Image 1: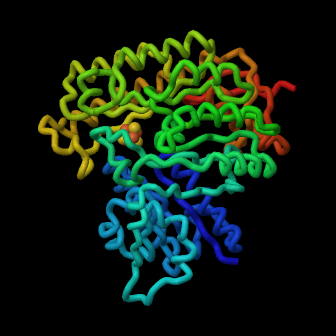
Image 2 (image 1 turned 45 degrees about the horizontal axis):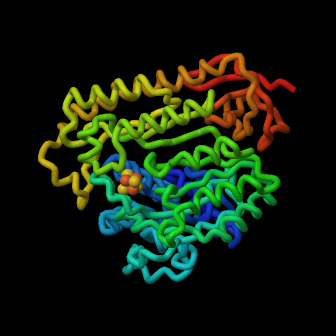
Image 3 (image 1 turned 180 degrees about the horizontal axis):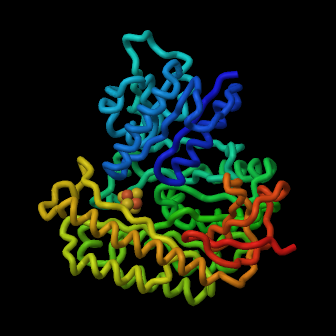
Amino acid sequence: MKKVSFHTFGCKLNQAETSAIADQFAKEGYQIVEFGEPADVSVIHTCTVTERADQKARQTIRKASKLSPDGKVVVVGCYAQMAPEEISKINGVDLVLGNAEKFRALEFLENLPPLQEIPLVRTNGLYDHSIFQDAKTENTHGHTRAMLKIQDGCDFNCSFCIIPFARGSSKSREYRNIIHQTHTLIQNGYKEIVLTGVNIGYYGYQSGERGALKRLLKDLDEMEGLERIRISSIEPNTVDEEMLEIMANSRTICSHFHLPLQSASDDILQGMKRRYTLKKYQALVEKISQRWTCFGLGTDVIVGFPGETDARFKETYDFIERMPYSYVHVFNYSRRRGTEADGLIDQIPNKVREERSQILRKLAIQKKLNFARRHIGTVEPILVEEKTDQGLQSGFTKDYLKVFIPAREDISNQFVPVQITGTWKEFAVGEIVF
Ligand code: SF4
């Protein structure tokens, strides 16, 4: 039996797509093994939002070719889309596929050209922007929660962002296709689905249906056998009163909001071409706080965007400290060729960006810990996931608190009620209460 391994960088959308590609290999009889084990094929699904992401991808590509010198190395995703020549120069790479071609990896592998024409590079398909690349997932190969791709690409063109270049304009998965896919996932035993995309608030927009995401949420909420729906990340300006109403009245939609902030300085938000002001963002968080007593609130922040003075950075720090965030992802601003912000003159020195990132990361750990502590004494159902090698198992609450419990044989992929008793690192720990 041939073996294939996968390494995925970046967002939940990449994870959803890796699951779909893995599914194709499994159906062709491949055994999926952990990345790091020797394999006949190693697929590296890349991200390119920062220079660091590119760097990590290059290291992983080299590692894959070292681990399996006779195996094929396939590099796909956003970095492959944006820098195919750079990747094809790395020793050991056999195939470089862009965001449209990656779903045909098997087909390309079976028809590899002679050695002198290796690596084979195919990255042009993306430029037919109207085509939604389906990521059909029936089995997520080791993941308890199923990432379901409903949308791709973005029309927002934030000035720092390379994603519209790497994934094209916004496009959506066919409605019936999502419903059908969800039925299949339920039949295959999945209890929680995570709706993923680049800008899922724009789901259905290009076909003129502005309320499509709300309709989808309502329909999914009524599906028998589905116990949780999670929205992976949503642009703040695409969430309105009606959507909050649907979420608050639903049986299954998680009280978990990932609302990218990027900066809490209005000047910087304007420079970034974000589509909200700080006041509007804050008003949204207040509305959420009025409806839910306990909810998870996550965000992404970019540190060191051009023009970010100490005072503007402080605005961001103070805002994050004040807001009820349960986790914060901190990104060091990275110049991306071709983006508008790359041409701005007031770039911040790397040393300053790094220092500010460290400061915010410390605050992020504190926010996470505070969130975990707030749950101590409560009893919450968690959907139990993987075992760790320390005899523990973990799962998430509805509001996205990660809880570790002592491992047991019979509870994987089950909802179990857990009393939160304390914290471990920045996570919660608890005991099952039957
Ligand atoms: S909303 Fe802005 S940051 Fe997010 S993917 Fe679109 S362009 Fe990039």
